[in-house]
Image 1 (cartoon, rainbow, N blue to C red):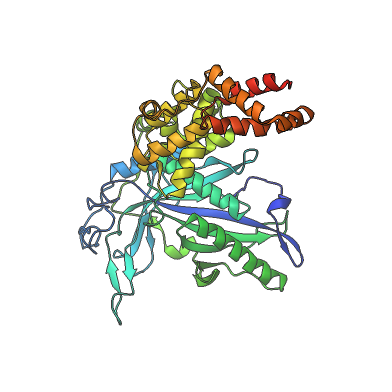
Image 2 (cartoon, rainbow, N blue to C red):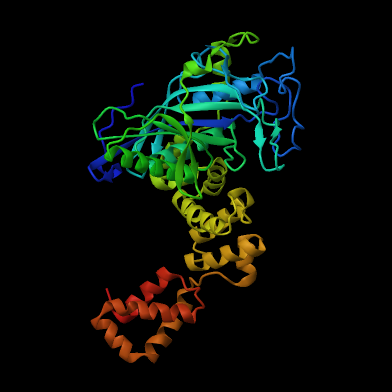
Length: 493
């Protein structure tokens, strides 16, 4: 496998006792396909059923049962491949991967090996407003999930729940193009965003619907790849980052002590903050792959792919580019808004026909800030896009100031209602009547002759007068009008 040739980035190297080391990371993401039925049977894929409630005779591997490919799972895999800018293979083959495990009733897993449904692709990942990396995709293939062994239900026996057995997974294999824990975390976040936009996987890591096998090796900058270890089944983006850091330091320690790295499969223990050995790594020939005799090769034509492509939603990169061009947003703000499809839709509803930058400012800083604080996502926002849009209109029209707008946002958040009606009913309009502002300013000047002398010598004192006048108007004076009147009355340019 050719990794993209990237010169070692000094900021991403790890300092060891014998100099700098570079981490090389490749990820295998197992994404549960969003479909109502399993990959080769009609059983339900619903989460949280009673143990063994969603198990057909096919899933339980009863003699004589034949698998039938679920077309929707194939469609989801192709859609995902298109979202990864990847080569779609019109002909692919399902293989048997033979290994024995109590929760694998067939004694083999139906997977794809030499001929996957999706070939090489590429994802662009933003690391910062100025840095973007490109991560190669090696392949995406379809396979069935195994069941689940439960060891905590009985003192001397383990139980097996086959509800998950046969559920469709997409295994998305990256090239070894990642060079730090932060890059790996950003890559998984971006991949998860793409899957959620397409609707091919909900990305719910808590339910195990997105899991990662993390391959980690270390090398001296510019040296050939080192021996890699695979950390199995890491189920959160934070843990992926931690597992990489811990494993890289473990390997560096061994190599600096003159030892060698054994290729093996390891597990990450977040409680102890360490990886531990699970088994020595199997090679492909150990699994005795061969084409599944019960399944014909999977074949579809270009028209099938073209139809799926035509109905794909606008994907995050395209949406980000459009937000920058159409609404004049910074790349950073556009990235924040497109991270979730619902967030992007909400923003567009607020920005339509309004100043895009002002809309983005209110959506990101006020709304998202408050949602984060309360642990809600945008779908549970008490302030609708129409309400927030109304608030932005009132600022744009000069009816309320930015300060009043924050108070108004608080009222809409807690009590609801139409922003314009609230401003009317509660007398929250800013005072733009210059006569009223002048009267307040005159009174403050008359009452504070010594401050008037000071401000002429030191114009930065103007802020004191602004504060007093704001107080006098109950925070409703138009700040622009107020500043102009004060400067004129005090003779300050």
